[in-house]
Length: 229
Image (tube, rainbow, N blue to C red; front, side, top):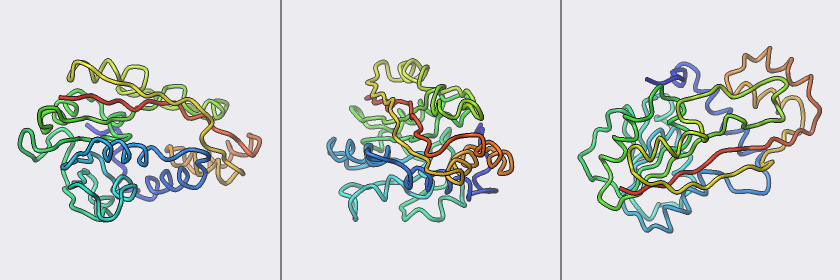
């Protein structure tokens, strides 16, 4: 079951999160750019983007992509903006045959599930032998500069536990970690938007932003995990 079922009711919050990251990311490429580079290097020909949203991974690739990329999301509101091909479906019940894809991707998705195991098993099922899984996870200590006013809610797929969860399904996992001040929020409006994107009510976000000094560097902590079937 999803923990953030508001994407259809409030797609603006999802879009705000993406906008804040793109606008204030400094000195590094985005996570979707990094995943796109790995897929290109791997020479994949069929890729499933699980929890694709409005197509951030698709936009990080050359146009047209050098491989078939299928976007899948449970939110019709977000999927409508995806350039396609696209499928509306649940990550727990992928509507594809076994071994359909060379790579499955889930960026910032598994933390929104009560139990990531079934989704990982589905992602493995639709992989061809030797196929690659790429998933991301955020640390429980992400954005520590905001700790006086906000802390990430723990999930069933935090970066601290994610490698073990992936190993339960795939046996082995490679982990790339990041821990650096990758975002700088220049003013209170930017801090407010960062908090609103993380489901803090707007009045509370504005009040919290007023308590912090700007510009505010924000340390991003998390992991990209790679496993093979």
